[in-house]
Structure formats: C-alpha cells, structure tokens
Image (cartoon, rainbow, N blue to C red):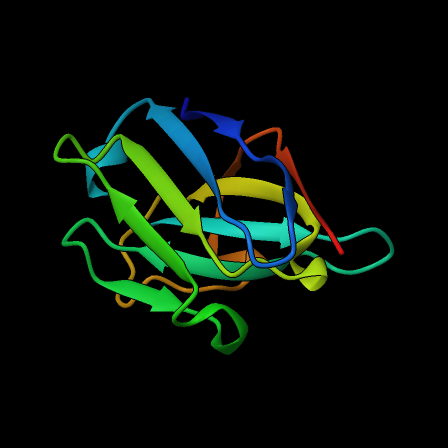
Length: 125
C-alpha cells in the first residue's frame, strides 16, 4: 500500500513564495509518476505539475515559470516550490502517485491511484 504525506503550505501574500512537500512510502514508489493537484472551494480538482521517475516534469500553463516540481535523489520525496503567488493559487494541494508506468506523467485525476490528505495554501491580496 502506498502512503503519501504532505506538509508545508500555509499563508502568503500576493507575490510571495511557499513550498509544499510530500513523503511517499510503499512498493515501487521510486518507479511511479508523482504529481501535485489542487482544489479550490467550489471547483474541481486540477493537476498542477507532475514528475516522472526519470525527472521529466510537466506543468499546467498557469503555473509555468512560477512553480517548480522536483523529486529528491531517493525519488520518495517530492516538493513544489511556488513563487509569484496569486490569489487564484489558493487551494488545498494534494500529492498523488500512480501505480503503473506512464510517460509523460499525466495531470488528470484519473491518472493517479493514491492520494495524500492535502495541505492548505492561502494567498492574500
């Protein structure tokens, strides 16, 4: 069973920076796609960024140039550095992992089998 645990996030002002992190454990996690999703109140969950076991990264257009996703050398810890934050970035951020290989790693909720509990990010004006 794969287990994902997020931490980080918090509150920032517009233009500020935050980081969220995810520690993953379980079988075959080092060979799994991992991704960050977010869900704002009243909205659907959306993929933000994904990273493959080979460190190939994908981003949605609205965060390109502002967010950076990375996995450490063990491939079990994933980070999302967020800068130039905007109020629209306010959401609960979820870590996700996929059980079977995929390349590039997708950004649809249906691409992922395991989810963390989420961590809050709030951006004030």
